[in-house]
Amino acid sequence: MSRISLKRTAGGIPVYLDGTKGVNCGYLVGVRTGSRDEHEAVFGISHLLEHTVFRKTKTMGSFEMAKLMEGAGGALNAFTAKEMTAYFGVTLRETSEVAMRCVGDIVSNPLINKRDTELERAIVLQELSMVKSEPAEYIHTLFEENLWKGDILGMDEGGTEESVEALTYRDLRRYYRERYGRPNLSVYATGAPDPDAVVKWAEGTLDPMQAEVVNKRRAPAKTCAGLSVKNNRSDHCQIAFGFPVAGVSPKERAANAVLAAALGAGTSSRLFQGVREKNALVYAVNMVHESYSDAGYVAAFMSCTGGNVVRSLEETAKTIRRFRREGLAEGELGRTKNIIKGGIARASERTDGRLYAMCMDDLTHGEVLTAEQKMRGIDAVTEDDVMRTADRLFSPDRLSVTILGKAGADARAYDPSSADLRSRSSRNRPMTCITASSADPSDAATSGVRHSDTVATSPASTATNLTERGMESGSIRLPILKAVGTLMSCAGTSLATASSKSATS
Image 1 (cartoon, rainbow, N blue to C red):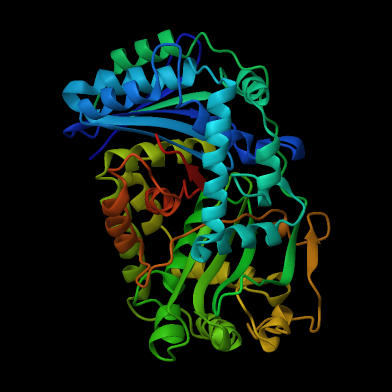
Image 2: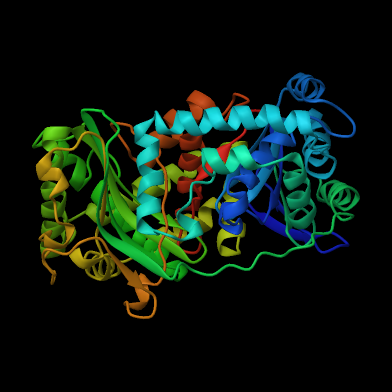
C-alpha cells in the first residue's frame, strides 16, 4: 500500500512525498496559476511562458539540459492547465538529483529573453493550428467555449493566434514575477525519495521566490444550453452532448464519475453498445466527467459521418432515457466500479502518472490521496447515488450540444431542448444561458475537457495504450496527460482533470 506524507519548507511551501518505491524517482513543481487566471490582453501567456522557460536558464541552455536529463535515464516536461502550470522530471533512482536540479532550474532561474520568446511563440502557434486539425481534440475546446460562453474558464489554455502573437518577452517576465513564487508553489515527489533531501532542495531553490499576485477566482456566472455548430469542411463530424455540474462534494464527484463510466466507459458501456455496436451510427463514443475546483460537466463525445449526426444524438438520448427508467442492471455497478479502479491501479504504477495525479488533485480540490483511498471512494458509491445524480443532471433544458464538421440541415436544426430524456423540456428554444442566480444550485458553474478519440474508451485501456505510446518521450501530448489524470483522480474525494497543453522539452 502506498503512503503519501506532507511536509513543508521553512517558507511554507507544501511538499508531498509518495512512498511508492520503484526504479525511478520523479519531482514536480506546481504553480497555482493557469489559463483561467489570465485576462483578455494576455490570453495564452501561461502556456507560452511554460514553453519559453525551457529555452535557457541562468546556468544552462536547453540542449545542455536535455543531454543531462537523458544521460540520467530521464525525461523533463511540463504542462499548462486551466488552474495550474507544472514542471516535472523523472529519472532513474540513482540519478534523481539531476531531476531535482533541472526542474528547480527551470522554475527558479529562467532567462526569458526576446529571441527565445519569439522562437517559442512560433512553436505555440503551430500547436494551436495542430489542435484545430485534430477534430477529436478540438471538439472539447469548442464544447467548453460554448458551455461557458463569455467566461475565461471556457477559453482554450493556449489562447488564440491573435493573443499569442501580441505577447512579448516583457509580458512573460512580468507574469513570471507576479505569479511564480510563494504561496503559489507546491512540490510533489514520488519513488520513495529521501524526505529531508527533497525539503532541503525545495527550501534552497523555491523558498526565495515570492509571488506578487495570489489569484482570486470566481465560478462562471452562467452556463449555456442549446446547439452550436462549427463547419470544418469535413464530412466526418465530432459531437459533444453534455450537461453542466457545479463545484460539488467529494461524494458527488465520485457519483458523477460512476454515472459517466456506466454510460460510456469501455466497450461494454451502454452508449458503446447502443450507439455503435447495435446501430453502427458512430466510429467512437464515450462519456466523461470533468471537474475543476468550482465547475464541471458530464458529457458524451462521439464521432460519425454527417448523415448520422441526428440519429446518433437521438440514440444517445434514448440510451440515457432507458437508463433513467430501468436503473443499473444486476452486476453493472460492480463492473463499472472495477473499470474505474483498474484504471486507477494501472495509472498509479507509472512514476509520471503519480506525479500528475498528486498535482492535479491538490491544486484542484486541495487534497492528495493514494490510489487505495481513491478506490475506496469509488467503492462507497451506491446505486441510489448514481440514479439521483442522473435525475439531477439529465434535463433537456440543461443540455448543451456542439457539432464540429459539415453538418446537414437536419443537424443544424436539431433542438437539444426537445431531447426526450424523460424530464420536462421547453421546446423550440434557441441557445440560452443559465445564470447562477436563476438556476438550480447544481447549474451555477460548469467546465470542459479534452479526450482522445479511441474506439475502446474505457479508463483501463486508455491508461495502458496512451501512456505506452507517448509518456516516455520528451513530448507528452494532451490526451496522454488527461488519460493518466482522469484515472488517477477518479475517487470520492478527488476527481479532477485539467485540460492541459504540454511543452516539448
